[in-house]
Image (cartoon, rainbow over the protein chains, first blue to last red):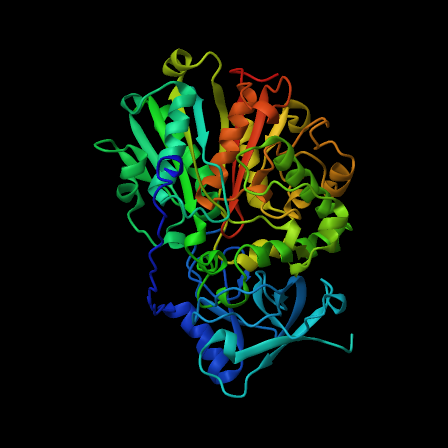
Length: 160
Length: 388
């Protein structure tokens, strides 16, 4: 312990671990990502028992625990519930590089959905953003099956 | 039929930003030794050990075995529990379950973290769904910051309200807690002038990440009464997990998992008027904003009344219900230990052993844990076996 080992300068041993992962998206996310990539469509899944629509789609309803199989389209527009303009540096867990800042994380309820999504908003001046604003998805021209690429970002709808 | 269980011992390290003098095992040993000393016990008195941290901070997988060089768990039953930010409170509850079940009489619970060994925000970000959420959720800071924009929008709370919480907790740490990581006196103006790390959360609104460890000893009633004159009885526990989709937690201005966990714990403990019945609270408030928004989930004020509760000063050391005499999470955050520190500090309050942090005459205390995708733990402790 510190008080007993002062005569030795404590060492730190570096570990530069390179531990790549490949996450299996599964049926529900794959269906969601494929619709996005091939058809520029956003789909959710509906619980036959309580009627809630979940985006992104998932196998069971959180409340009813019944298997959900009815895929339904949801809007490309939605309402901003909460946001934050992140402005501190940290390591991007997807590639190990420094995250590009600032960026705005937007928590959005898409029209027709009963759950929320998170994506990037292309406005980083917090004075111009307010919860309750209407947003629209902006798609990438080249789509690859990556949610955070195929939807490039969300924008504030100016004409409301 | 569960057995009555009390906290009989509590020890912690001096928490720091970067403790290069100690390995994790050495940190654990210091906390364990101090907990045993506080209860005048030896390792031979311990029947079982529960240990917890968040694996990805140190990238050490079988911590239950690895830690034996510090924990003293050689040839004893050891269980590792890890539940993200709530790890510390979850291991506290697991210690309670061990003793309450009748299987073990005296249980040592250890929470620890050597956060300076890796990038904390990157590690926390791995809590979030890798395909649909991780990209734009900046560790713990981003989600907490976003929640406050929803709360401000709904109830008219301000950034100054959050700054009041920050001043309360930081100054308590500076004045009363020699173990705290950050011991810096500050004013609302200091907080308001600090830079945004993630709007609306500023640098002085956000907890640090610390290197540190904490140990708490739980014992069933007959053992507990032999060990100390006045154990801190665990009268109620509540745990509530939500779901991985972080956006569903943040979209709400409030914290439903905390409300449900509190209801469970209060029902078990007989708490019907929390603001009147509790004498002190040690709350897991990782950003000052949460110190405004989560009070209503605990039943300490009505919906949307967090700001007026904070502005009125009732949660300051001289108020009716002092919150975080230790300085709480805003001053000290060795993540796997953070929730257990709340239980340990709350226990020492009702045992009358909180020294400079002591709220005079405290009988009933509230402790909470928070973590991951907005889930919650609640613990009710008291110096008496029943509450008025």
